[in-house]
Image (tube, rainbow over all chains, first blue to last red; front, side, top):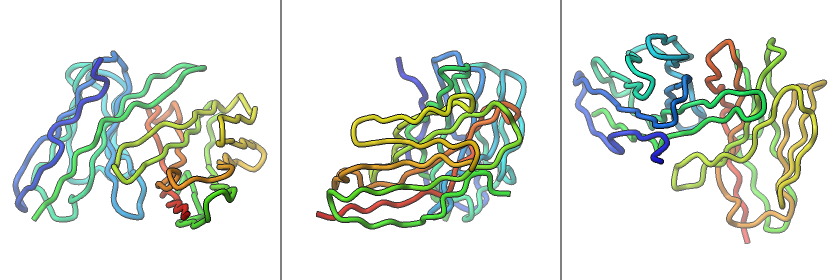
Length: 114
Length: 115
C-alpha cells in the first residue's frame, strides 16, 4: 500500500520553464489537495479537489494549474516557473468521515527555480 | 484572514520541562476537524492527533496531551517532560467540509529542546 506518492522528490527549474508535479494515491479518497511550504509561513493551500472533475482554488493559486481526471491522480502544473515558486510542495488526500477524518501526506517535492 | 493562529513562533526549553504549544482557530462551520502535526528536521509531516468539533474530550497519549475548548476556539498541545527528540516544528491545522476538507495550517511553532 503506497499511500500518497509524489514525484519527483527534487527538481531544479530555470525561470520560465514549465513542469508538472505528480501526485498519485491508492486509497480511493475523493478529497485531495496541494500545499506549498515556505520558511516561516507554514503550509499554504494551493488547490484542492473534492472528486474527479472538480477542483477549486486555495489560498495561493496564482501560477499553478490542476486537473483531476481520475480519483487516483492530482497533478500540479507550473506553467512558467518563477523564483517565487521555489518551495517544498506537499500533496495530501483526505479520508472523510465523522469519526475517522484524516489527512495523508506525500513525502514532498523540493523545487528550486533559478 | 488567518484561520489558524499559532502565536508562538519559537520555543526553547530544557529537557524534562513541560511545554504547551498554543493554537487558536476560527470557523463558522459547526462540523470541523482539528489536527496537530510534527515536522522533524527530515521534513516529513507526522500525524499526532485529530479532534472532531463535536468531541471536546481532552486526550492524553504518553507524554502528549491536548486540550480542546470550543468556548475559546483553542486546541492546545502540551508535552510533559520534554525530550531532545521532541525538537521539531509543530503545526496545528483546521479542516472544514465546505473547502473539501483541505487543511488550513497555522504557521507552526519551532520547538527546541536542549539537554
